[in-house]
Image 1: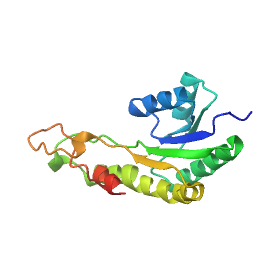
Image 2: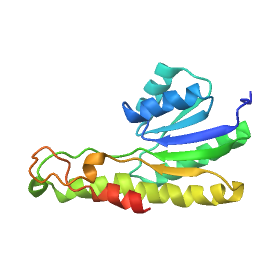
Image 3: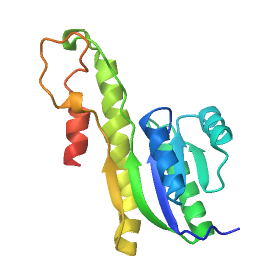
Image 4: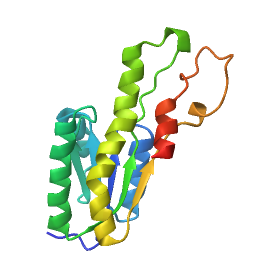
Length: 170
């Protein structure tokens, strides 16, 4: 069954909070929504909770390029099935790493970069040719206000969030 509305939005980072709120708003506005969740279990739980015919949830580990490629191929199949255009890609993958900058591990810093910036770059590379071909579409990269505010006296502040700054420049 083809859905009458042909507008499709992809949300990477569909979990609780902002991603979930975006999903609800877009479904209410009659968009086809494809949500990307880290695991099949999370995707299934979210899909079971919402039960909406215009919602597709796909597992996609944003730290694994093969997983990104598989999700991208599935998105193209969904797009074809619904004869839709990709209106927007919303990159809502922002790991929260709290603590003192001097105690932040290189591993945590690298993970934040990979999850936020590298995966956004990889999705942009895949989607941009389609958006150019259809002559429309938007790429949206979310982030936290705290990532750009200088609050050096805080011990609970996210470390200088260069991933959010990099996304701003992408």
